[in-house]
Image: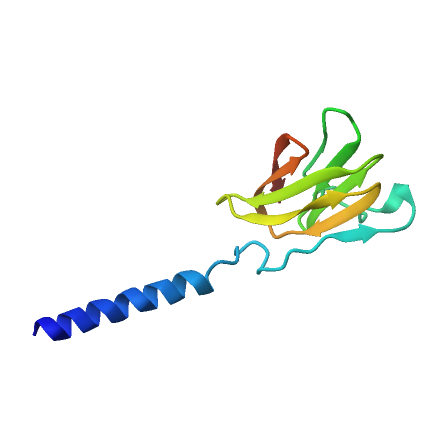
Length: 129
């Protein structure tokens, strides 16, 4: 009887470890960490939304070199000058994206939800509605 219980406990523990390892990707992005550079005119790089509901917030960093806007499709980032370190975290604290942004405009596809965007050493709460 003790041997059967010990084996059963061992199997449950092993299955739990496999379940945790297979569930490491965040449900917000399906495990894909994508950063897309956006080319084209500065005036129309965010999709037009007839009822104005797509844009949920626009914020700029302390030095005004980086501006970001969120929509229901993701996060648009405009880096005016220089190179800035960027990290995107899920609400759970999981690191979703990390890297350096050169000058330009970028898009990070993200599902609806709350994220933390860290630009250089300043953090922002980002809501994709």
